[in-house]
Image 1 (cartoon, helix red, strand yellow):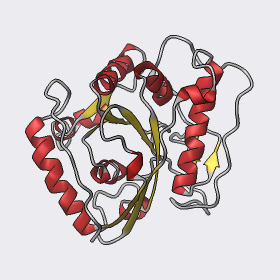
Image 2: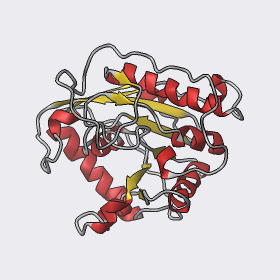
Image 3: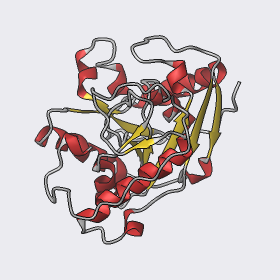
Image 4: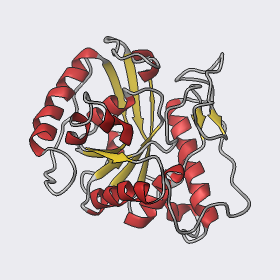
Length: 268
């Protein structure tokens, strides 16, 4: 059984989620998860005791959204695909725990989710988003969408890279049940700010910063980095797993490539 870190619940009745379910349900789930799995957590000193921060983990399995939030010492809100609201098993439960649904058709629909995320950060809370945008089907770490970087700039919030391993074995693709008793590692990295990458008003800085975040995640997760976006055509590699070889660094772009104004789901 892993050690259960201390937890401080933050009241936020004006934000998405059920206060009672978030308070008592998360407490019960934390105890259960830390009893059923051997969870090793490092870097908790990088999680601020107060104030906003954006958590950016790698994404391999559905249960990533279980292990990362339940190892935190604070309450967290997170982006989730809007399709969860179409399933009776999840349409009420996930939003009650603080999931912010995003309509993946893009445009103004995605902007609503980002505006809600900004409210979370402006209120001094933690927010979690997968910078790859979707699960990696190959086991590799993929190129980041720039939504997290843009949100950090908008809300003056640091980004905390998160690299985990073991979740793919706990819940392989298309498996509903999670296998108990297996080891899971969750590593939190040092906070990063876009200002450290250059001029925040330059689109090249946003892209370079998003790449730098992915490099830190690769170091924390042990995954191989591939300079392509994750998607439905991302197929498993014969040698890929959720704990692969030494990562290679993302490359820095040489010309502006990001739209300056409109943010769509594709940039999340």
